[in-house]
Length: 172
Image 1 (cartoon, one colour):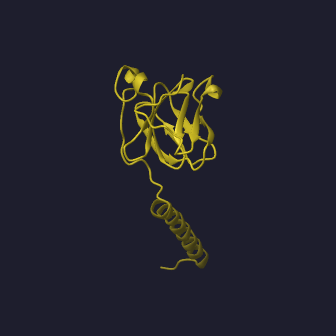
Image 2: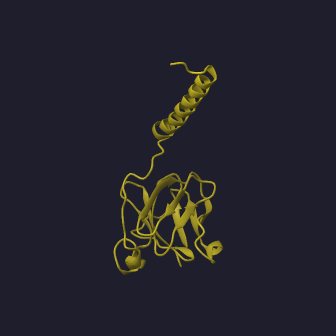
Image 3: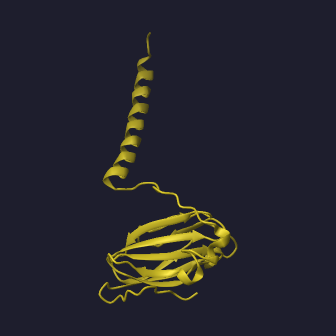
């Protein structure tokens, strides 16, 4: 069987591209530790406010025993609740977010914090805010006519000035 030399070159070029793409996937997975979500956690979006982790009285910032921080949020037309929260700089902050209505996106500019919030599922992302300051949290998935008003504010304070309490809630 004879293969044209030009076809051989294109075959090798195609295989080289496949190798480059696979190499980049493995590099980001193993070297940069970037993975798709490992566990899928479901929630009933219609009953978020009635009880459980996403009940209105349980939203906000909670200091953990290991020094990390957990923030529980609900995304809904047209805002993130609570609207304001305070977290410490330099500590791991885990955001747990659920949508009460439609698809939303969460993005904190100038950080690596970003995720999609799909109705019926819990989105979880962990990040560290390296320095104190004010950070806006924006919705980056179009969710309706009030989309441009969907925001929240994260105030990052120095770790030694942050007061961990059982629950620190922002205002709506």
